[in-house]
Amino acid sequence: MTAPRVPGWRRLLLEAGYSLRDFFGTFGAGQLFLLRILASLPYALARPRLVIQQVYVAGVQSLVVIMLAGLFVGMVLALQGHNTLSRFGAEDTIGMVAALGLVRELGPVVTALLFAGRAGTALSSEIGLMKATDQLAGMEMMAVDPIKRVVAPRFLGGVIAVPILTLIFNAMGIFGAWLEAVIVLGVDEGAFWSQMQAQVDLQDDVLSGIVKSVFFGVAASLLAVFEGYNCVPTAEGVGRATTRAVVHTSLTVLVLNFMLTAWLLGGN
Amino acid sequence: MKSGCPGADNIIVVRDLHYARGQAMVFDGLDLEIRRGGVTAIMGPSGTGKTTLLRLITGQEIPDRGSILFDGDEVTRMSRRQLFRMRRRVGMLFQNGALLTDLNVYDNVAFPLREHTRLPERLIRHIVLTKLHAVGLRGAWRLMPAQLSGGMARRVALARAIVMDPDIIYYDEPFVGLDPISMGVVVRLIRRMNDALGLTSVVVTHDVDEVSTIADCSFLLADGRVAATGTPEQLRDHHSETVTQFMQGMADGPVPFHYPAPDYGEQLLAPERD
Ligand SMILES: Nc1ncnc2c1ncn2[C@@H]1O[C@H](COP(=O)(O)OP(=O)(O)OP(=O)(O)O)[C@@H](O)[C@H]1O
Ligand SMILES: [Mg+2]
Image 1 (cartoon, rainbow over the protein chains, first blue to last red):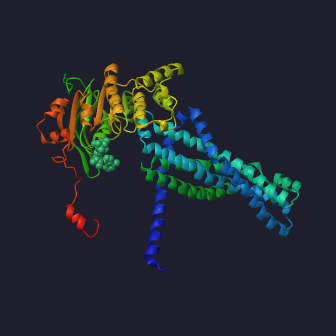
Image 2: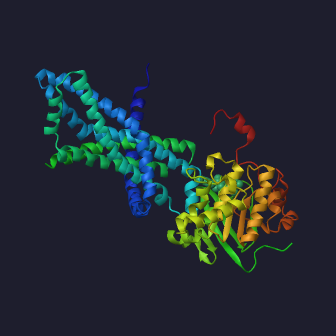
Image 3: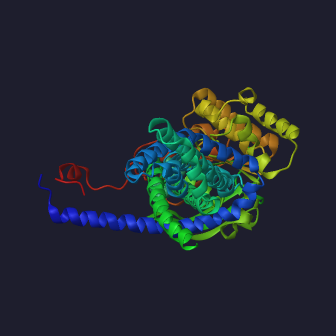
C-alpha cells in the first residue's frame, strides 16, 4: 500500500502535538479542579457514609480484576526470575526478587492502571451522565454544590481505595509467585520466604510502594471526576470524556512513577 | 376572569435584558415582570430562548447587559452564596425531571431536606409522604427513577420541587411527551399547588391550549423581546400577526418555520455541500 508519505507524517506530528497540548491543558485545569475539591473536603468528611459508599463501590468494581492480575503478574515474575536466576544458581532469591518487583513497582503501577480502566471509567461516565441528564444543574438549583455532594466523595473514595487495592494486588502477586516457584518449579519453600523476609524492607520497599499508590490514587481519581464533570453533556461527549480519562491517567501514572522512583531512591 | 398580569407586586422584574449565545442574539432588550402569587405562562416558538430565560432568572447564566430582580435583589450581581440562598426559595422542574438516578423516589424527594435541614428522620418521612401524596405517587416511594414513566418522573420531580416550600416554581415544558391523562393531571396539579401553597408559578411552554386553562397571564416571546402580554383571552384576540400565527399554529407568518438557509433549489443542485 502506498499511502502519501509526507502528509501522513505531518498528520502524525500534528496529532502528537494536539495530544500533548491536550494533556498539559488538562494538567493546569485539573490542578484548579483539585483545589475546588479540596475546599469541599470538609463537607465530604462530615458525611462519611457517602465516602465509605464510594470506597465500597470503587473497591468492589475493581477487586476481582486486581486479584486476578496480581496472581498472574506474580506467577510470571517467578517464571522469568527462575529462568534467569537458575543460571547463577540463585533460585533461592526468587521470592525476594518477585516481592521487590511487586511491592516497589508493579503493584502500585498496575493497580492504578487497572483502577483507571475499571472504576475510573465508571466514575467519569457516571458523572458525565449526571451532567447530560441535568442532574448536576438540578442540584445547583436545589442550592446544593455538585462538587461537594457528587465529586468530592467520589474523589475521596478513589483515593482511599487505590492503596488498599494495591496491597491486595501485592498479596495476590506474592501468592502467585509462591505458587509458581515453590509448587510448580520446586524452589525450596524455606529459602523462598526467608530471603524475602530478610531482603524486603518495610520502610524502603513496602512503604515507598504505598506512597506511590497514594499519588496514583489522587491522579486517577482526580482525572476521572474531572473529565466526567467537564464533559460535553451528550452521549458522545460522555464517551469521549471516559476515554480521555483513561488515556490521561495511564500517561500520568507512568510519568509520575518515574519521578517518584527517582525521588524515593534519591532519598536514601 | 381577574387579570393576573403585572401589577404593583412583582416577584421578578427583568429590564433591558441582552444576551447572545455565540453569534446568535437570544435576547435583545427584553422587559418582563412576573406578578407574585399567580400562574404566569411564558410561550414562544422553539428556539426563542424560553429555557435560556429561566437559566438567566435563576442565575445559572449571566446576561451581557440588563437587570434581573428577584424579590428586589439583583440576580446578575449575586455571589454563589447569595445565589444559593435565593435558590432555596425556588423550585425548578426540569423537562426530564432531573431526578438523581442513584436514589429512589423517596430519597429523591427527601434530598433537599436532608441537605438543608437537620430535621429528624420521622419528620422528614412525614413531609416526604405528604408531598408524594399530593402528586399521587405515595405508593411509588420505593421505585428507582429508571422504573418510572416520563409522566411519573415529572410528578416526582414536582414533589421534590415543593418539598422545601418554595415561594416560586419554574416549570420548563411540563407538558411535553405526556399522554392526555397525565397532561390533565399535571395541568390541574400546577394550578392546585399554586393556590393551595400560595406560590408563584412560571410555566414555560409552547402548548397554548393547555396552559390557557390555568394561566392568569401569558407572555409571548419572539425575536428576543416580549411580542405580546395578556390573559389567554386577550392574546387570542390579539391583532398582531406574530401573535395570531403562534396562537393558531400557522406555518406561514412573520415567524419563519425555516432556519435561515440558502435558496432551496440552489442548495439541492450545488455540487458540494458548503
Ligand atoms: N449550548 C448552546 N450553544 C449555543 N447556542 C445555544 C445553546 N443552547 C441554546 N442555544 C441557542 O439559544 C437559543 C435559545 O435556546 P433555548 O433552549 O432557550 O430555546 P427554547 O425557547 O427553550 O426552545 P424550545 O422550545 O425548543 O425548548 C436557540 O436559538 C439556540 O440555538
Ligand atoms: Mg426549552
